Amino acid sequence: MLTREIMVQRQRLLGEFGDFALLTDDLDAILDAACRLVATAIGTGRAKILEIEVPDGTAVVRAGVGWAPDVVGRARVPLSGRSSEAFALRSQVPLIVPDIAIETRFEMPQFMRDAGIRAFVNVPVVLPGPEFYGLLQIDATEPLAIGEETVDFLHTYATLVGFAIDRLKSQSSFKSSEAYYEMLLRELRHRTGNDLAVIQSLIRLRSRGASIDVVQELAILQERLEALRLLHVHLHEGRAKDRLPLGPYIVHLADNLRQLRGNDRHDVRLRLDEIDVHVTRETAAPLGLIINEFVTNSFKYAFNGHGGTIAIRVESVTADRALLQLSDDGVGLPDLHEAPGNRQGIGLIRNLSRQIGGEAAWLPGPGTRMQTAFPIC
Image (cartoon, rainbow, N blue to C red):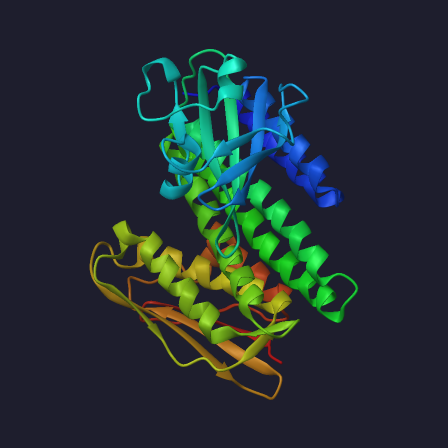
């Protein structure tokens, strides 16, 4: 298992690469930095990025660290036959060869044999579409032991590399046009969602081997991040620049919460009335978090292992205001007057409601019922 120091170092390097990739439009500089930082993170001193030239044909060493000058930009690897690179691209998952001396499936390119390479890891670099750009390859001159945490890190890192490459490819296609500015906005939304996914991946890594209390707190954080990630998915898919239909987002969010709460849900049903309003992204984010908190707490505490129903309803009250109504038919709050100030989740709902110009009202039972107003457009 990785030490805390190594995990912190790798998280820092992920952030360093992400920051650099956003600040430069030079693809060669980005790929060089990607090789340098990942070689440091794994401790091999060697890494390279292979770019596919011809599918099922060859890939060229586009960037690298620790390699002779006649390798980068010149050396090529086959993507057919007994090529480990072709195998990784076909399987679409990282391939680890811990010691080529005992590996019989693959043939290593001559320039790697000449450099004394004994072990390597191939990680596919995928662009949205999906479209394969090539491979991130970690090389070592000694046998290499790679654990699950390192594989997860390399997968996340290669995903960031893919995002950076796609950003520059898209930029070159749309520059100096009206569509370029629309693309920037959509890409920002998409990238924010991807950044949230990376953070979720890091939280999952941190959860391994942690105490029960820490795991539970991280799980709550994961659910809140997932609500925000889904919002950015819907913003990215929508046509409008500054608003989105609330219904599809809430349906997606509720379905995800039901899946995430598989161990708690038993025979709990989620009922969603038809929702036909549009909101700005500034309103959608707090609404998503309010629904996340209410539904999560209902799954966990309302039914005591029995069945029940959680209902989500949105009702237009004026031309520019609507009412979100959340309820369950469970055991209800222990103390309607004390709970809003004392329970963290309910306190968060209250603050989020105020953020969108509403006031969370906790209504008499049966079960737990609350409502808050919000602006529509």
